[in-house]
Length: 97
Image 1 (cartoon, helix red, strand yellow):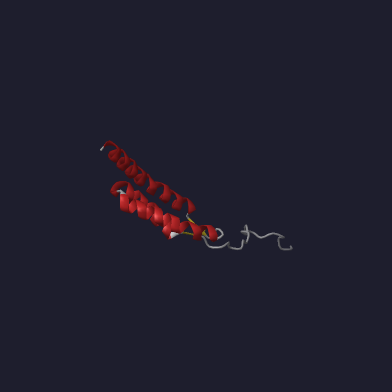
Image 2 (spheres, rainbow, N blue to C red):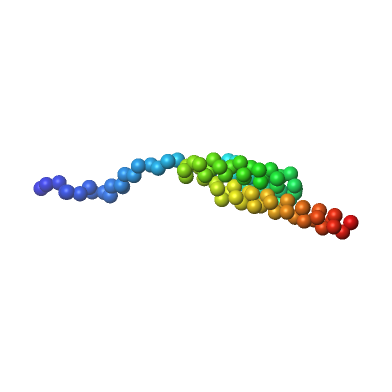
């Protein structure tokens, strides 16, 4: 009797691994510090915005190997919230005095 023409168990397809992708540490730090800026206010919020702005160019140039663009954008936006609130309060306070 000839051997079977198929393997007795399923053979997984071989796929070449793609490029390794990892998340930008600056983007993660931007989001974390900006969230802290919601509670402590000005300095961490400003640092979160700066970290987010520094993190974006390398992420965009990486060609998909470096992730975290949305984290950096969230850090920038969340960091701007306390700064806008502070500027609004200061402008209203100076207008009333």
